[in-house]
Image (cartoon, rainbow, N blue to C red; front, side, top):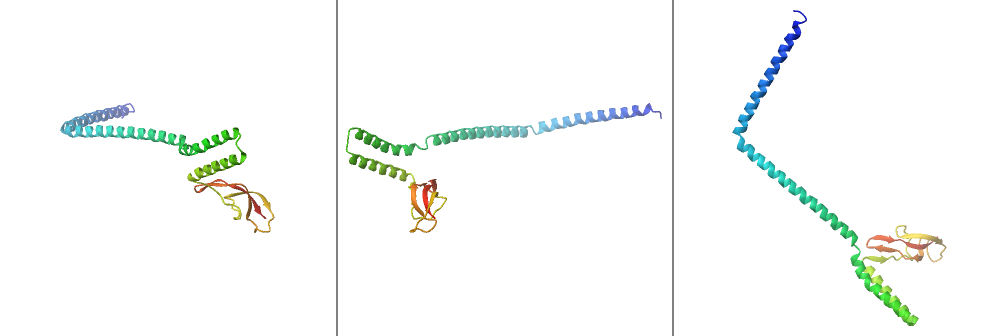
Length: 188
């Protein structure tokens, strides 16, 4: 055999392989068409179910998106108007302070003015207490850095070391959380 004959043989074999592959593809298509026509009602039913499931999925996704938007808006409104109830409770206190200021302008006596301001202060304390705000009891208690802020250490004969002897500024607890630590003087 010569060198020229060898590639021709390979080309013929490649052409035969290509012809065999295209014939097999045609045969496969004919079988598939035959199968489709035989199973056409079943395929139609599956297509119908797939379409229904797709529609159900799209509705569920839209419902979830609406739910997410609605809850986000509710959360924003809650944050915006969270203090509404407290402010409603404080309005009578503000009204009473206004009345006290008006009475002081009209030249009322100092003792009745002081008594009125004291009553307003107690009303304010009650309102804040109803919301969970409580003042800390500090004097005579052991120093606790979670509740107290020491601003000075003093010598004391009547208290042991590390005991709060004087409160400079009141501390407050809101429900179970320290809102503001008390500024105190501690015995040394």
